[in-house]
Image 1 (cartoon, rainbow, N blue to C red):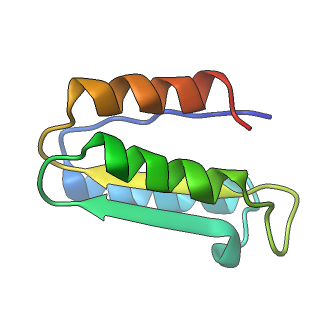
Image 2: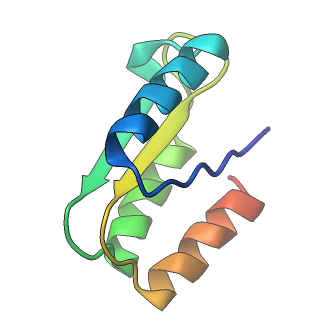
Length: 89
């Protein structure tokens, strides 16, 4: 299993890049979970993301979870997210 972390300060370029990246990897749109946060992202948000990561992909062999967090992310949420990236279920 692979995890990718893509960061950017430019919101519009990120969406285009991620869209192209997912198409290149052959991930079907039904297997993409989008989580968008306009304000601070907290530990409860990461727990909800963890619940979606556990689920198997519907159509393909791979699924993607895209997190758009444009402001702050709490330290607790950062640590929980890092654990998911390092040790996916």
